[in-house]
Image (cartoon, rainbow, N blue to C red):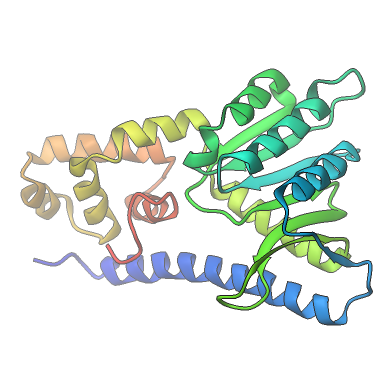
Length: 259
């Protein structure tokens, strides 16, 4: 038994979210490739393929911040440690504290250096969690560091970018990812309560636009129980409608766009 006509609208919306993210990532990579061929020599600098060199560049860039730092950390390990340590010195030192935003995946969120800087930095360090993000560092909206591939399937490179247009594009991409991310406490709640099989079955039906009575029969609970679960899920996702809850579940990685 299929859901109402909203199902196709939900599927199209979920697909459009994923497509927009993919297009944005491709735009950044293609722009980096273009600028590497046409920009002024000092506009984009490719670093040596040495993690110690990259870590030193991270330290230098963050130490020069005067207004704010935004960092997207897709992985834990040395990369996250380097950013966490540098941000820690920036936000807890004796001089004026500089605000920082750290956008983590569940993997980098588990890095102790990231947790520590968030705890010690207080209001100056904001932390949010998302399922996937491109590794990016933006300082004062004027200089950025990104990991990208020169061409599809090509080698990974780390570039320091000072071209204003490209830094602005990266800043906008970060802002979009930040807006769709959640607080760590909310992430923990979602992980505990919404990654169960029963929650997934309900989310699938919300995303597909099923009516409550049809969905309740399929998940084998009473209509009243189903509606109680739906209300709890909506509160957890910060959704104002069932359709929005389904789309939000796709954004947070609770469902794929094909579910």
